[in-house]
Length: 358
Ligand code: NAD
Ligand code: TYD
Image (cartoon, rainbow, N blue to C red; front, side):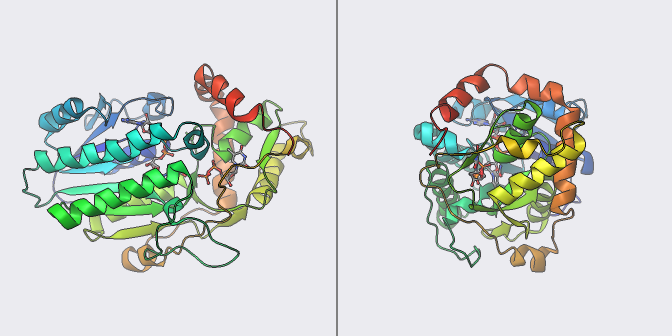
């Protein structure tokens, strides 16, 4: 798609972590686009994430559930979108282990519902239309000590979350092959940054350090993830949306692998520096707990395709990004308080109360 014309884009999951950064980028960078944030506002969706841009004339919010065909069709009929950027999902592996069906409903059936609605609304006239599906590197499974996931790596998901994302990716590809629906998919590594819900490793541990709570490291702590700053992911989505080839997949990664325990120690060091009177205390909160079942040992992305074809690379180092992320959480304690009240306490109890000790 060119970025010259006016267009209307539905961004699903725009009130969530990554979605809110994508919405902000598109609303501010493309004032001639109409950006419609379609979000059900589950526990992970939070309109506070978008306070700074919510009054922009090119921003619209629609509360709707991607599982409800009538709601989605009405929004398509009202806005007549040229494109969809689909991020709405259940996104946390531990929750997928507790309730896998929620992931099948939202990630698989919700995605197919959106594909059907886009196809119907565009009435088989697909010129200048695009369905962009945002996915994860977890669909590729687990690596040993060496190797990288490329766009050709065979899918081999292990968690209910990654299985549901893999299924949704397959459906998106099937709509391209079967109906010629113009699609593009990106599979990204672990994101971190402002506005991430404190159930994922980095914001959970920042919140626990603030409250002097234990830091539950799963298993031996030697699991490896590739971390990417969320604004760099949003920038990659922008590039792929405008210049990606239809029907293709792009891997996005941070060239930034960390073993969990090393990352947690770096986080503790930075938190000690930023919080007064904490020197050397945060690391003492580290507690090794029972492992996550089916825990993937290592993820690592080969992002050379997006680098070579579209010229993308991460813009911040991990130390810079992590430092900015910690600053954001320390400056936004109200945001943290709001999202960790209510349902969060129940989840925390369910997820961690029986985990202490191995
Ligand atoms: P998130 O959990 O922070 O946000 C998900 C958003 O989707 C929330 O705003 C929620 O309200 C909305 N949503 C959930 N169910 C919905 C439904 N039925 N109808 C409408 N809206 C619904 O997730 P995130 O971490 O921002 O991830 C966004 C996307 O990026 C997901 O598709 C995820 O699989 C993918 N992804 C995430 C990461 C990561 O590290 N977080 C990495 C790669 C890919
Ligand atoms: P997470 O942020 O849940 O992302 P993902 O499972 O999608 O990679 O977890 C990142 C890594 O941190 C993963 O190896 C699991 C581990 N982890 C812990 O050790 N303790 C925790 O409390 C959490 C949430 C994750």
